[in-house]
Image (cartoon, rainbow, N blue to C red; front, side, top):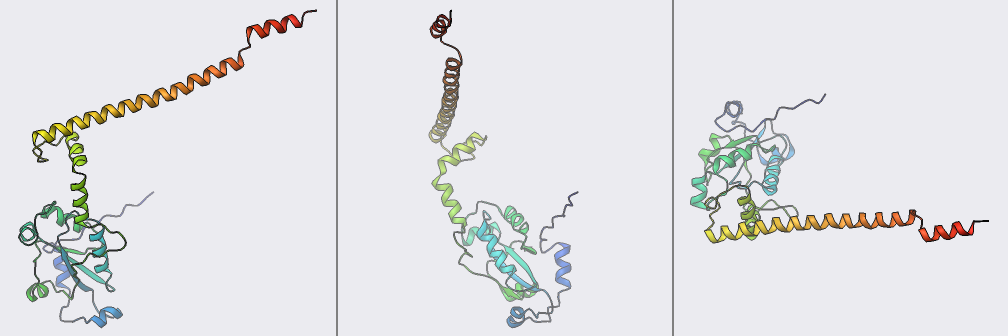
Length: 240
């Protein structure tokens, strides 16, 4: 019998679990970098990192993993910027803030999520959340060819026709995909042509298979069935 582990999501800062953790953190004990590196900190080390986390991808996960295991016994707090802050400072996102909050709290490296995180940190914020260290870097936490949000968006833009056709076939309206009538008609025609092509390829494969069966049956029949003329000659030769 397989046991099922209950999945625990990272709490938001206002949740009871996060408030209890904050309450019992003795922030009067200051943790130095040397203590953190040597693993001699007398309490969990509260590390903070933040971001937008739009179209959550392996690069985001790696960043959070690195922050979580920066030291031994880290309690990782992750701030997620709101739609308003992001739009004012960087631009629009694909996912809205609630979707981004949820996807981050599902990451196993995260211990707590700060909603509507500030774009710029100050001492008041750090003290309120009892933060010991901030892990922040504008450069991506890459290893090999880790994808970025910009990479994903570039793929969608590059293959826009493919995605538009696929989503029209799934039932999305032209308005939802921001398509004009000409583009909508073009994609629908291309989709129908693709279906016809697939059917023709299926028919060709079917007849190829059948033709092999016909040829095989023909050869088998003539190899196993005696020739009437040869059989007659054989009978005449065996007569006394």
